[in-house]
Image (tube, helix red, strand yellow):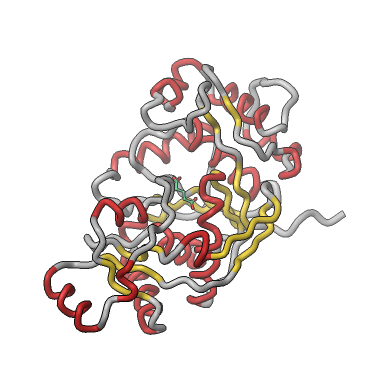
Length: 305
Ligand code: GLU
């Protein structure tokens, strides 16, 4: 019997601190999703935000992945070193007449640029500015740049969440491509990088499901292929909150004090429906047990481990 076509998956952590349980969960499932097909895994450090990311965190992320038993192919890719690629993609969108300067407040722009911070674009009036008004404002300050979205529905078949669709004009609005400080937005960088790195399967938290239609639109405009998506349930704290960096007990340094890597992998595998009960296991031993169909769709409360 022939297995599934080999896919190329990726780890795409943001090196803004130590990894926590949620990051490990995403990386383990990305690795299983790709390796179970005999495919490749590439590593990209999403370090575009100079205020939040440090080289030392990048190195720590790689040590942590190795500790867990997750390997990758080729050299790690740093987004901070690929600005030229994003600039070229941005110019292509500008040439299509679809990018426009936005002079809204910095707070709004930052919110729109981050993948996890309620990043629905607010309705912004800058699209309707007259050429004279735009020219005047451009002389006064550095704008962010937004992408004009169409009144069109984008739908996809997610490997975990099933059918998902969104009308970009109604449900999202024009979104940020580049911040006023010149930093390219997550949405643009991720699309350029996934294509350039040959990624065919994107595994990430379900909070990014609503980014997929925006990314599909960008892929269409830039003539890039669409990867398959698997948006996995989020791991929540006992009270239902999303795990965050401030949940120190779920940070890898704290987890390492209590668990060996096989113990941690076994617990995550149990949450993923791959094991009936947590037992120490290595990622390679999970390969024959892995299938997307076993994964729950709903977010998971993990409580105190
Ligand atoms: N860098 C993002 C994170 O650490 C992931 C983005 C993605 O997978 O598209 O959550």
